[in-house]
Length: 219
Image (cartoon, rainbow, N blue to C red):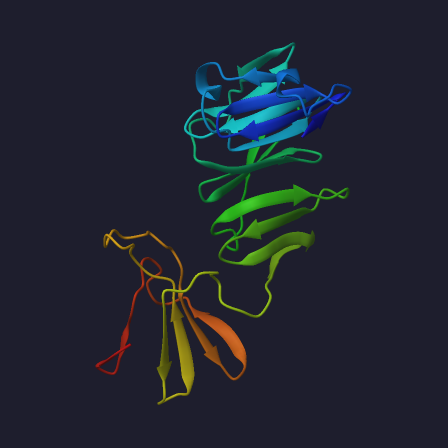
């Protein structure tokens, strides 16, 4: 992210900052922030409210002002996905999306369509555009929240495909487990392809699905 004449980078080993007027091809011209909670992976970073904000998993949101990083009092000790900025600071953490004003007032954005929000952006009209791993693109640009998805499975990596001749449907499952038979914890519905379109069996279980059974027949 950019702030004044500097660029700030979130890395796996802290935060790097460099003056854009310097030769940043020279590693020595970068300033490193690795003290305390910053001594590790930085999940996300953005510019907001005349400062730079960073998210550190299991710790909190930090603001850079006056040459130092300060822990903010809100939305602490969570597993963060991304922080972005518009008219407000948007924080995706766990299965929640939070909106933070410049004065530190926090509200949670609520909608049944927000199952696993990954990243969110706010346009110039204050409308939200949210990437949700379950429901695709979610937005309130038409007042109420709606979702928009391209026709396809709800997950990118499938574990198993099974065809059921009785109803001419192809089923896809996300799995699963790794080579050591440790569950992956994938939270995805069973998907199906029928009549040229994909859909999801939202009435079934949604975690570590490797197969299923219909009418005493295993798939």
